[in-house]
Length: 355
Image (cartoon, rainbow, N blue to C red; front, side, top):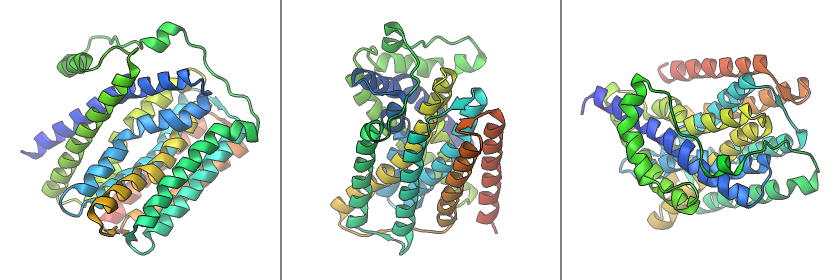
């Protein structure tokens, strides 16, 4: 297959991932959150973050078990996605609507996110991942979930939740205005509508979504590896840029939607919570599964990835500085600044990859 063919396949996979996550997967998790009566920031940091980060998890798993040295592909996708989440998703959400935040959940998520980054640096220090490190990553994510659930009892705060009607919860609107793009994607939209049951059967929707996301993630990895080979580009660069942005589309869409509903705290909790999920669970589980079945130590390449992980610390500092200086509010100018920083990051990543 030619470069054009792989590119089209990559774009189609991104589109289908976005549709599945936005219309079906995140929707089913939103209904589970509603049944459990979780506040919006808790739902954003847990179910919403897990649902919208599912592509990164499956890309990491498939990249790790794929024959050949492709582990960096999964790690590069997660690191690149983490930077995209912090700078672009929070930035765009702030541009869409000014976010007024409670400091308690922000401190919770940024502190735990910083701990996650430290763990990642320690895991990369010797270039190998062993069983203990993989288990610690997964256990730390479980600890984070418990903290999220009980944090409001430890440090009480109020959360602004948007009210929804039963109809809005049970059946999301899926009608689109007719356009040339919609004409092209109609066959795929039609197949998805026939594949998934009605929203009220959210457990079935959840299971089918997992299977579809896993399949599309496999296509993404195969296409990215093929494109990197044809163009003679390091696979990690494809991961840090193309795959990272593509797999973060569900995060971006879901965060913008809740930001428009005046739930900025949920959008930011989703972005930071997704990063914590990506690092601790999205890397920890693939590592653990691989080590259990192969019984071999995982070798990881720190080239390019190490500098990106260091940048994750910088994004935390920038976000905290903006929030504190703006008295826990983020407006459109702060949002534009964050998006600009991401563009600068991309430029430097590509430059250093070839120099």
